[in-house]
Amino acid sequence: MKIKYMILIGAAGLLFLASCKKKFLDLNPYDALAQDQAIVDEPGMQAAVLGLYSNMRSSNLYGRSLPLYGDLMADNAFISTTNSNRYIAEFNFTYISTNANSRDTWGTAYNSILRANNIINAPITTPNSPQLKGEALAMRALMYFDLVTWFAKPYTVDPNADGVPILLKYDAFAKPSRAKVSDVYAQIDADLAAAFSQMTSTTKNSSYVTKYAARALQARVALFKGDWAAAKTAALDVITNGGYTLATAPNFINYWKNPAPVSNKLETIFEITSDAVNNNGTNALAYFYDQSGYGDAIGADDLYNQYTATDVRRGLFITGTRAGLTVRIVNKYSNTGNAADKDDTKVIRLAEVLLTLAEAYQRTGDDTNAKLYLNQLAMQRDPAFTGYTSTGAQLLSDIILERRKELAFEGMRYLDLLRLNQDLNRVNINSNYVGITPVSVPATNFRRIFPIPQAERDANPNISQNTGY
Image (cartoon, rainbow, N blue to C red; front, side, top):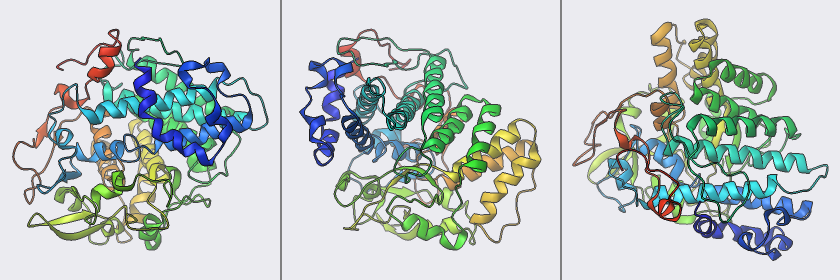
């Protein structure tokens, strides 16, 4: 593993610790100190956990790239012809093994994993250490999930395909090969199970991983494995025992306008927080949608047309003009210019868990319960809607459509197409897709997943490349 590269990628995140705990900064660099000596007490562990959260806010991860990839590479968003020349290769599926965005996502994700390992393996036992280690376990699992999803074939397509290297402790000289996709998922499952069992907190605000955040992530991972029974069990536990509630239709827009973490368990289960001091500035996700920022990414007209006039989610779009065209401007992140606080990035919400439960019930032949949970969400979002009455294949299609509408601009759409092994078919309305931009990308296209970064393979020849690159 190209450890030194990954440490450099995360250097900016270390600056966050300056305001948290000087003792942690006083430690020797990771590549000069045995990993089991890096954290020596609970304050150091607390500082390390804060540093891990900060690293997740990187623009290479949840601060921009991960949620942006998931909509821009699907059919929810497009890049305007007036643009800053960013993410063009991802939008057009022309990236190669030296692509900077995917390289930096890989590097920063592994940097987060190394940080998490440092916490998980720390020889500290205090009343608070199980919670702190549980948070690190859940975030390590999330990073492995993102890596194996973007850089390997879907579990539902080939669980025996090459996945990504698994690192569970710091070793500056390690040169691991790629583990199988199934082995990576097994590690994710083990981490989330351990996190759920040892965490005690269910009341921290939404900017922290709590017990039921780990449980919600278990539901997501099970869904992506096609393990419907496990997805149902985890999702039902969150819905029944987590204490979360949906934002009501009248409060939905205000829910998204709120830039701060919540403690009332309103909808958000876990989010990466940004505030007036700790934020990505012009590299933030919101800046890429906001027309007072770069404004490169625009909501696809086909997506906009899926919402009825009475659907409150339509209110997250602004009709405006860009490059001489009437466009649907994404307003899900409205705090770019807010000096007091900035938009957080939602990682998982109750809405997603409801949709996971609906799909799990449908996949196991229980259309009645599938419609029950699907309609809990759909009828709240559209007060004029009387509910889905479909069954079988059509009901499954309705669930997937609701996932597209509800989770738009949160990075899930392309991931759904991957796990479902569906072709990408963009509907070209109002010249959303022009020039070399493809309107169809088959599921069999090798570029449906990212290449292993060439810089990584140069440092570690044991890592094989994905077919086609």
